[in-house]
Image 1 (cartoon, rainbow, N blue to C red):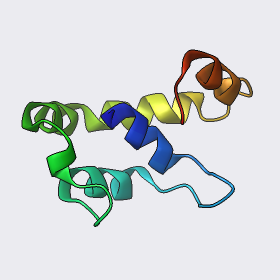
Image 2 (image 1 turned 135 degrees about the vertical axis):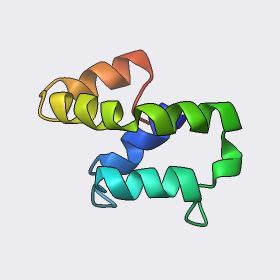
Image 3 (image 1 turned 90 degrees about the vertical axis):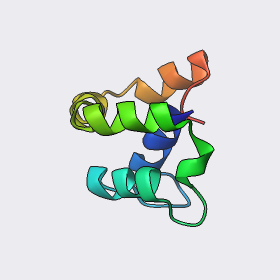
Image 4 (image 1 turned 180 degrees about the vertical axis):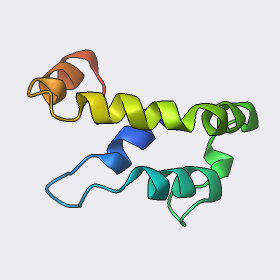
Length: 79
């Protein structure tokens, strides 16, 4: 669920702009009124905090892949 939330916040949607990595980390780790740290297990947040830079690298490496959303839809990701 955390990975899906990260991707949803980083991705552009017709109804919202994409957010940057730092802002998404802030939302996941500190909350913003809609997404709260209490939505995730504390161990998961600790693990995310320790590898957050990898999330950014991975997201940025696949951001421009044309089939990304098609693959995600077929596999149930990127709601």
